[in-house]
Length: 271
Image (tube, rainbow, N blue to C red; front, side, top):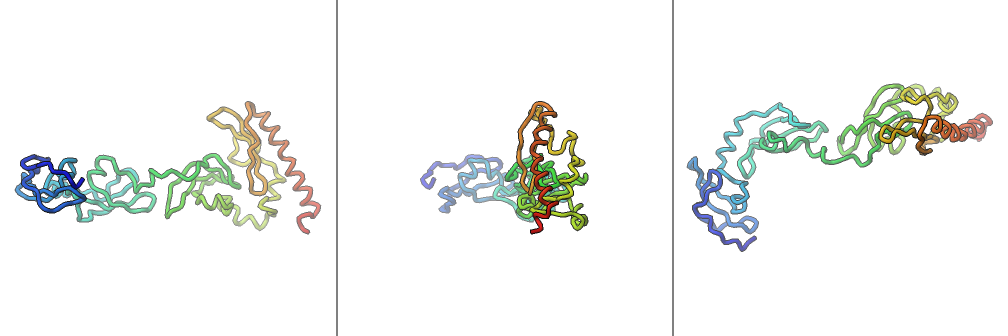
């Protein structure tokens, strides 16, 4: 890089004409004094000229700044204000707020060309794909984005309500409903994270579409999947071609419920 000797004198780069090299260097590249068609002058490294990064003395950036982008939306970004600064190519820099809550600075050209649509959160996928998985009374519907360094998931509760839940709360078991159970817990009995009343009912949840608790249709494969959740752990029981086979698989697994309830009724867990 530092050994480049090519003479750029008289060559044009956009609105600029290279006049003469200076003794200054930037990252090993010669800095040239250039004259702009508007009459102004600017110093620019040869690399910036050759790559098209600097094409005027800044006069075009000043013209672009006259276009007010304040309040406009570009993807997940809302433009807040003109920072009053320009980049090395003379392009206006705007401060924007992303829907995730973060703020970012970017140029008008990046926004208008559609190259900048978020603070960068769109390029960061969630740590895990939990769509379709259950956590207590919650079924994960979709990824809800990242806020304050935390991943959130949109979940549907068995009561029918939806809620955005922090991923860490799902992992730890801290959040197992939309909040509808907070007032009802005093009327329920939990042993090892298992609700005795829910085991006794054996009724499908409100979100269940198969009619069989613990069985759902996987649309991607067209097969019926059976699973069972007991004491905070969900166990996959298998995929089946028809609903009847999936229901039988689930029924066999529910024998663990019978054993648990028999012990509970005998006072075993009171010891």
